[in-house]
Amino acid sequence: MHIPVLLDEVVAALQPASGKTMLDGTAGGGGHVEALLEAGARVFATDADAEAVERVRLKLNTWVERGRLQVERCWLDDSAAAAREAGWAPLDGVLADLGLSSFQLDTAGRGFAFAREGPLDMRFDQSRGESAAMLIERCDMADMARILRDYGDVPNPRRVADAIWAARPIVTTTQLRDVVAGVVKGRSSAIHPATLVFQALRIAVNDELRRLSDGLPALV
Image (cartoon, rainbow, N blue to C red; front, side, top):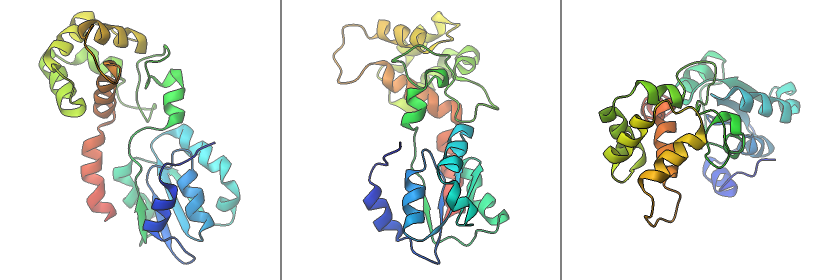
């Protein structure tokens, strides 16, 4: 079950209705997609995560059969082109619910969370690209410090990067968690010290900011 955040506000902003065509570039669990469909719109939904695509197709198959929904696997920065190629343009509204989903966090094998042990992956699209473990292995300390600073606002990024570099190879989520916790041991914080490190690596692994920068102009 997927309960979207700010669902009423999203629907109010996009104003879906019969005759309108919407694009959801981060389909996730399909909660936003379903609400847009129920309001009368046609929806072209995309997601880079193959599991999310399959989940939405199964959940909303009735709408697919009616011709009101099409779900495709692609990144946000490719979704405008995908909609045009599929004949769903022009669009009346676009939704991008950025970040990761509870499904991804709750699946240990995806490597997004440090609460339970799993492979240090973090890829939205597991069919290509390098995992977080591979990224750590090839990065020098300066590159790692830059990633931690720019994508996570990690305090003392060089110190954390040095610890990560010295501990390589790091192949599991709990390994990385413990390395980071060891560096900032004894420091007070409202969140676990590994939280921002995991965020930074996830953004780097999936090239999220570049994809957003490239994708938004095309969607507009």
